[in-house]
Length: 437
Image 1 (cartoon, rainbow, N blue to C red):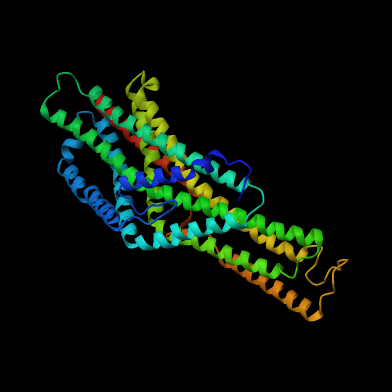
Image 2 (cartoon, one colour):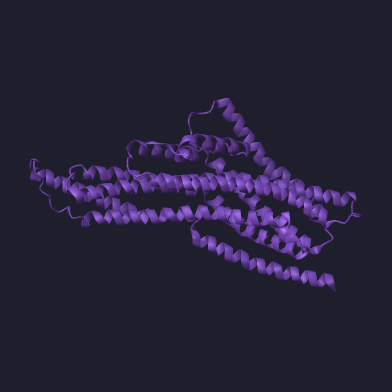
């Protein structure tokens, strides 16, 4: 995919990928390598894998035991309404914790498969299209846009969550009176800050794998669009010139094989990450609920809350988390649309003016023997039939065989979260009424 002048993304693409790989390794996801350049040295790779296992066991076994042992101090507060907020936040973190367990098990079981069937297969497809594609660059620009959105959104959410940790400390200080400064309340405040940091690390652990899945899906969408433009170019040449049919069957066969490779990359990535994605959907549901209720509680407790830091942080985090999940589902929906467009383009070959049932005479060209014409015609028909069958059998994968990952699922999550939010608001009003009696 040559261009006269490289875009900003093309100039710095490898730097973005290297940054993502380094950050994923710090978070215990050494398996994530966006653009493998050269294999790591064996001792260094073994050290990173050992660090990944140690960090995972710390997050899954040691720290949950610590917070479980101090559970009463973690949720202790004189305000029952504030305690309800703490319980909702705890449920949010439990979903993240379950997703971390699933991610760790999946990464351990699929370590080689993710490397070979995702990272290396994607790199081979990238090299193949770079060598053969010479048409419009708009699919690449759309891919870059998706990458920019994700990169900015993830870094913004990291900043927002760091601010949220500071907001937790501020809420705890504001919720306790000056006279209530004994060791028990101080321990509770420290535990809540530590728990907020723990939740932030859990989010980073799971989000790195979700980002990698998003990246692979965005690449799949890019490759489907490039393939579609190559197929349209073949169709346009057949319609305009009515020739080139001698090699048309071969070219369609190559495009069919490439489509099978792209779809295999998509389904393999989806299958290996489906439980993490299901956890991401549940985390989005609980996060929407948690952030809505946190904002409501803050607004109900203070007349100046609408301009306070905690409300702003909670609002930004709620919006960012929702947009993050929405982007993941949006890419999946675009892939589905592109597969439908590919199927329609394949059907148009039989409706082209240069019908496959007749040879268009060309001046200054030697006549083609009847036997060659018949063999070429049968080859084209066979390749188109095989392509159509492949498109029919390559269906959109489902999350654990339950639901499709599209925008309808995100809308359902939003409605469900809002329904639970109304229930929590009613319970909060009940607690406030009981407190005022």
